[in-house]
Image 1 (cartoon, helix red, strand yellow):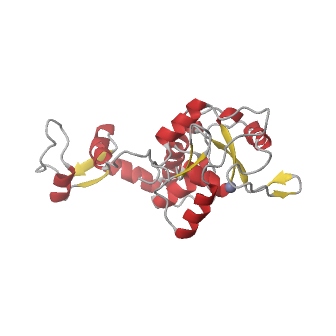
Image 2 (cartoon, rainbow, N blue to C red; image 1 turned 60 degrees about the vertical axis):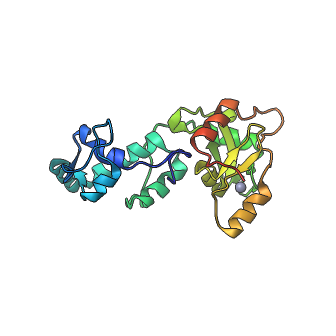
Image 3 (cartoon, rainbow, N blue to C red; image 1 turned 90 degrees about the vertical axis):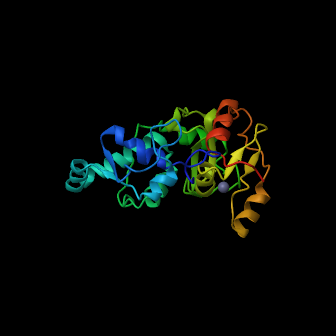
Length: 235
Ligand SMILES: [Zn+2]
């Protein structure tokens, strides 16, 4: 519910049941569970009623126990394939995987010029709050966000980029912040916290545009973020 696409009901019973067909997972104690009408899998309420238990097959469990580095490798692969780097540590923490220390993504190499190009286009400021920190001649606390996530085919171009501070980058990737078709800042109505709401409400409607002469965020990328990330409705 926190990290997945908005507007869909979380249905953990599907992977709980269907992972069995990947030969990695088994479910025990579900023999007496009533199936969903017209389907081969049991109802969620029935899985709970019979107290079905799921887990790795013994051989998989033993392998992961003997080679814990496989857990880390598999987690990294899943994170790289499905989520932006700004969320990797949060996800690992949320599922109690101790990946923080020394956690380095080994995903596909990203265009090293992307950050510089995007921060230049956004005048080395956060597009949301104008934060413009630097140390020496290097921006600090500023990042180049992909509007359509790199893991989902979003290109590393200025038209798919947004210069953001670390806080607003995180909130953008979590769908707390969004972009309207008029390229103005949207705030999710689902965000809570009185100081946070006051902070974000004051920023609502800010134009999200690069400096003159640089490409604006592409319509297709805005549409992707709206459908896949932003937690509608907007305030
Ligand atoms: Zn900011």
